Amino acid sequence: MALITDYSQPSFYHFSRDSIELANCVAEHIEFHELVVDKLADLCCGCGVIGLEILQKLDEETLSSIKEIHFVEVQDDYNSHLHRNIEQVKRGINGLEYQVHFENILQFNTVKDFDLIVMNPPYFKNGHGRSSENEKKRTCREYSGDELKSYIVHAANLLSQNGVLFFVCREDEQVKELLRGISKIYYIEKVEEAEGFSIFLLLRSQLH
Image 1 (cartoon, rainbow, N blue to C red):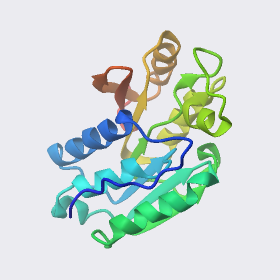
Image 2: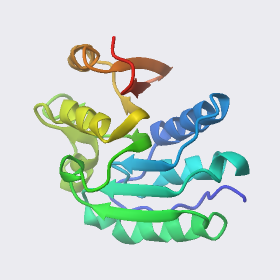
Image 3: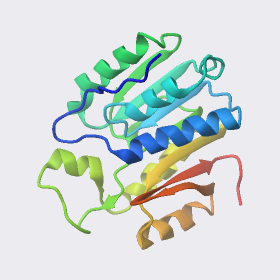
Image 4: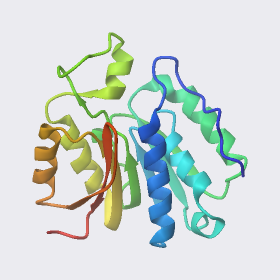
């Protein structure tokens, strides 16, 4: 099927290059390593672009192994946009179950044992740099206190034993220190670097 180019999005926030780069990176990793993915989650999913882009970029054989995809988003303002985008993709990819959850990802634990999780969390520290006057936009972009660490650790705990987490974040000194701490529990590797953000892979099964 042709890739969707007209994703429905709210006026207060449009996805940016980091989401597309993450989807590209994950799709390439799945196919290169011939990963078998039964259950997939897109956390902090917004309008669902990352998870939906991944589905559209996989070949038919790889796609056929996926039975479920779960989208988790805290802001209900994305509800109509997310469902509209899912319906567009379902016209061409309808052999799996699409589930949507509107809740804080830290409270999301009804489904576990994901083979693959993707996450583009808020990765700008609240109070550091320019902040938007729009509260909904701030929710998309900014985190407070230890929230970013909590997001990553919680996502890791939702993985199956051999599951893989891909996430995006900046590499300022605070984040580097945060990742050093998490790497004492989980294996973390930077797999791609771009201007303004990096993409990381986390494995639950490899403790270093």
